[in-house]
Length: 302
Image (cartoon, rainbow, N blue to C red; front, side):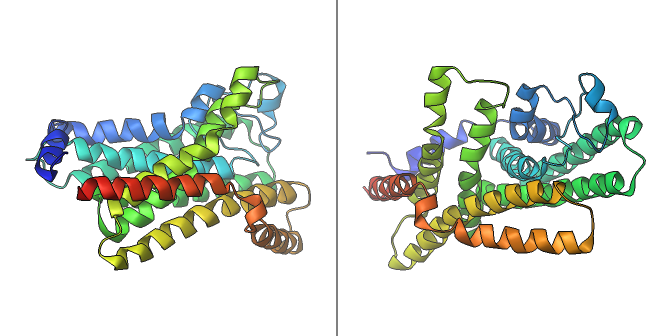
């Protein structure tokens, strides 16, 4: 049996990072961990909005800026923000405001990544309103998704209360998509073993979400509400990604007009609602999360 004091001492052994190292390490982690799927893919831009990237192997960019890059920016931005704020948990006990330092490092990484990507795109961008609008939309999406990621990471770094529930459940819900993007890079047929591994990516969500529930516990009974909220987040987030992926593809097939945008919004809303049905969910991963949560809660009380 492990006491809470022993657990605290074990965690304290990792808190050795000096204050001056928190910010740069968080900045590096935001991009390296968050955008690892993009990094292993090669980071080469390819988009009809910047046609010069289509003639040869495109220029290297820190961010996946293309018509279809919005879902990736969401997933990687949130995972990156979570990883960046996790660095604050490594700060030595005497460091002041470690979460603020880590969040600042994340902001620095966002700005640096945007600047590098903008410079890579600018010479290759088509001189059209559509290309300019797409570039602006990608920049705005990066900032918004990065802000969401840092908020999620702040909740995870706090490690308790509602911030932990909301942040932990959101990060866990996106982890399966991150793993899928990391392993399946869309570059031809997959080896048999890798195809088998990909079948298990939803279970990553169940394991991480179960860890979130175990930390929350179910005593007092009112904490069960937090379990319900965490499971609801895990239910909704995949539908958000599905609707976003569909909307991005549908929007790229028509003219950039207000009427077409409204059609895309209507269609995306329908896809979102339809994808909430149990038939489109991996229920086993949610059951696993509950089992891990219950088991972990009992062990903590023992």
